[in-house]
Length: 433
Ligand SMILES: C[S@@+](CC[C@H](N)C(=O)[O-])C[C@H]1O[C@@H](n2cnc3c(N)ncnc32)[C@H](O)[C@@H]1O
Ligand code: SF4
Image (cartoon, rainbow, N blue to C red):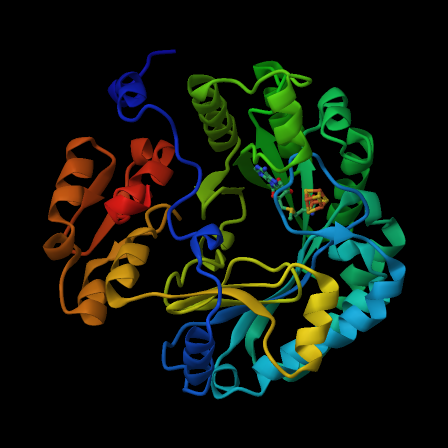
């Protein structure tokens, strides 16, 4: 195959790929009384943003722990379920009572986590129906449930499909059984395949998470996994495996009981392989890590309104919540969560309030989400054009052929897709890296 010029030059642009943008939940400061009050004040205002929101009640519980996972989840304990679901409804109710939420509309209800599928189908449906009754939805809205193939028997799937659940999101990670065992994934590749097929047969959309650059993962194993996902007709989230020191995998790698991950060049080649194989199979890269073949999903992509819309995440251990300039996470311990809810307060532990300057920088991270930055909208929000604020950064990225700029908008190029995390970091304050 002949290589294009941009393919030849791409490896020289940055030393390694950034997989996360700035302004993720890890950067949020611990909540202070004054930021809590400012958030409550914000919630008492009307939502004039003209953007729809997404509602995410989280069930941060898992039947077992995967060695790589950085999510703050707890082990499933049947005794905690009823008290937890009661507390979760109280938190949802607290938000539903605010003026901001009363004047907002939601186009998605997503059970997040963790693995909501540790609940029974009736418990999940009861929670979804509570949300439908207490929150304003758009005329057409979508219900999605995060699941693990291990806890998603066909009977459960049937009940969810019958209720109208549109999509199940599942962490498949890899279809290579040797790697599955190594990562402590609880079931076989065959069971994941069976579950995806059952959901597709019931007419549900299935989105599976796949990870690349797993220790010991060969390019052939990665290709086989990608081909299986295509064969199963799934939507795909492709994540580069990030190792966190506190995880079991982090400790295994440190002690040398696990072979190291591939280097940054190998990681990049794995991403390029996925991009090539999936686009060849009719997929389009959308959002932060998704490949989709469903055309209307390109527009529906829940992050389209970033950073002006919102994702109302709730429940212990939830991360990634945001409502315009406020971003937050909740406490991670279920008992602490229940106690705070019973005291009548929101169970937030980290809360960030962006300044107008931060909001300008966060608007530029739309490029990381493969979304254009609308220059007129930027001007309407800030009284300046992106070029007035970020002239040096934009010129530099344009010179490297990573972005395109016209009268209307700024977008990433095909080459920029590979470096979109690095592009986002160009707009961060220099002191944050
Ligand atoms: C909260 S999980 C949701 C899926 C569900 N809990 C399951 O595992 O079946 C979201 C996804 O984050 C990804 N993830 C978790 N830890 C990761 C890490 N250290 N690096 C990259 N991706 C990770 C995994 O692909 C995982 O499926
Ligand atoms: S990857 Fe999913 S199932 Fe595994 S520990 Fe994380 S949240 Fe739980």
